[in-house]
Length: 465
Ligand code: HEM
Image (tube, rainbow, N blue to C red; front, side, top):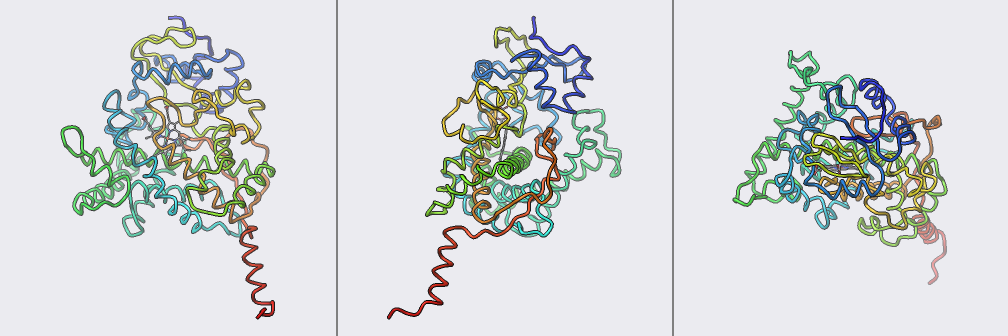
């Protein structure tokens, strides 16, 4: 089998380059080898990994789901999400699970969360003397949203405990020393509470205890709590069987792990680019200030707000790549025949930086999204039958949080940041530098200032009659 050209460096060196500077390494490879190239980044004896960014190749991959399998490549998530997770499934089992999860995350199911997202955004403390570390504030907010939307948890002791434990888990898996265990199964040894894997197992156990308690309560009270967990508890398969506790737990953990950090990072980028581009912020403000109605649905439909969020997910996509697809049945892509075992990767980062699709690809220009692009040119949420099931929720959440803050606050850098060299890795996402901090000030919007003026007039002007 003839593979596309690619790096001839030893696999370990390629892997280290990919870890150290993924965007620079991918860009260098694309310049040297073209649209399609081969790397050895999964270890010495592992299959070759081929990266693609041309829309035609992406289309072939996204529209040929039967040629690929997934579980083997996504195994690093297994200790966290469990065997029953959607991301561990293939074929018809995967499709059935998607059908079960989708309704809660789309359409009307989603809209009922609009008010809650706006209220939680307004309740967050934006007016801090030292400024706000944007990434951590967004993480807090998106964790709260996901605990309410997915788990249906209201404030109370279980909610507080789970929030604290999940926070700990997510912080730990973002530390490079801790997360390396997930990639190297021999390190996964429970040598007691002091060992890194022992700590992980104990933390997971505490989280599971709370999740299973919540699942048991739901099964018992039989009420519709209007959240994703309730929908899953009520769901039945073709034989009329409900999901097991283990299946419910694994799907909840999957949604949490894939849905929390990603949305927060998308928002952090949006704020980063808005502070760098005052003309874009002005245009966004004009759009939002001109609205008569501030309801969630009207806000989420605003074209420039939508374009700003899309562009924020283009320039530095949160996930640089879609899920790796391992060839199960040979397939031809971009003139090459790939044999079973080869791993193919749709490279979101490189596709989003193609100058033929995006003139001035480094520039932040939401206007390019006022016309539509194909799902093979723009795909921050991946594509085909494995595309992100949280896409609608993530975009809805991003738009509402961004709009609510832009409507209520002015913001500027708390400390000037050096020129961005490359995004910072946080777990599976790529974000602006961690020291990105903004100073927020309450804003008098034109509509609020009109109300204030009329109130002042009413107080000071003599009665007419
Ligand atoms: C800005 C936010 C987000 C981004 C950029 C993002 C991106 C992605 C990407 C690139 C994939 C892989 C798609 C593929 O391989 O074709 C994916 C898969 C997935 N995402 Fe998201 N995601 C986001 C938010 C969310 C949210 C909010 C949830 C759930 C609440 C979620 C749940 C999932 C799940 C379960 C999958 C696996 C789908 C499958 O294998 O069938 N994501 N996401």
